[in-house]
Image (cartoon, rainbow, N blue to C red; front, side, top):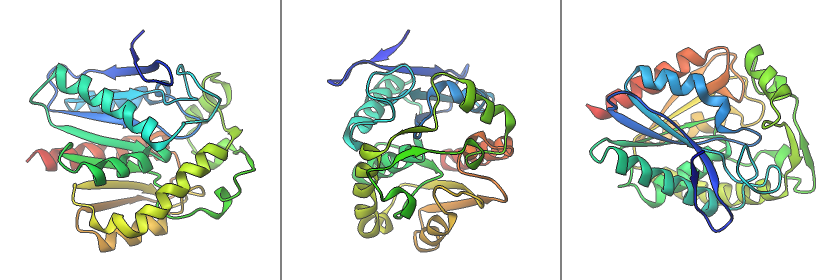
Length: 256
């Protein structure tokens, strides 16, 4: 089993390898998820000649840590750094794309703002780019209804029955780190220069779509694609094939 070394422990990762990759995506999942929920997304990218590298973040999947506790944005970023090094070593001349979902999207935006030269492009989904009132109470234990996340019965069944997935956990650490992101984005996100695609569901009850749409209207580097009726976990929604196609098309555009 492949693991990344980190001072907090060894983090498990997966690599979906294309036969002759033309790009490699470095992916960070969101709260309650793990890399095993992204097989069909990985296969969709592989079919388009794109590698997918993804890590179980701390407190998730097969990586150590208290349930739901990512640690800090810097901890997650260090895992993405390690994945990036692996991908670059495997195929030194293949362009790299940073991607994140939900909390992973927050970390991904931090990364491309701080190091715009590291990636050819970025992709974010279900990105909570402004404060979400329901997440402001750091003393609340999250207990989400899986139906709020996706209408895809296959994926909802995975959330309910997969022992590595969950919809409830202590949210103190998550809200603390989201607050850091929200404080920074208002001042710095308009300066985004890395070509970035934001895919978002119109019926996202976790991270409302309006904030991402508004940022996209202000930021030349930010391309926005909204999917009607889709919920928060858009990469695992009923429209997952269309979402993957949008990502593949965007990456192809950036490769020229």
